[in-house]
Length: 132
Image (cartoon, rainbow, N blue to C red; front, side, top):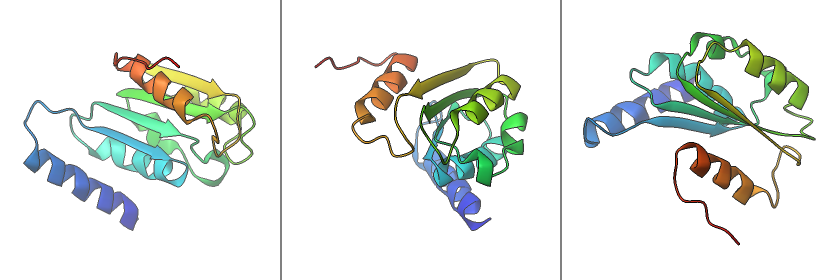
């Protein structure tokens, strides 16, 4: 798939440009999450994988079963494109030892919930969370 090859090329570029100690995280939303899941097993020394609203009913997730690194899954409680019950099943199935799940009371588009996603990510990577 061309998008996977594009993402792998971007990772190669970053690795050439960044310090060897730099962490690489693949992150995607919906279709982008699927692309990241297919690329992740092919990326050496990937720090983590962050997937928001992975489109489970429309996309295979066999690559997630092969990825054993740190993974963050975020889903919407009322997401009709990425049903939360499928998200919970997949979360249980994936072999990653370090896996994190966040279910947000919203649909597939996260309108008004962007800060909640941001706060979850910051909490997981130990960055300061901004309070209102």
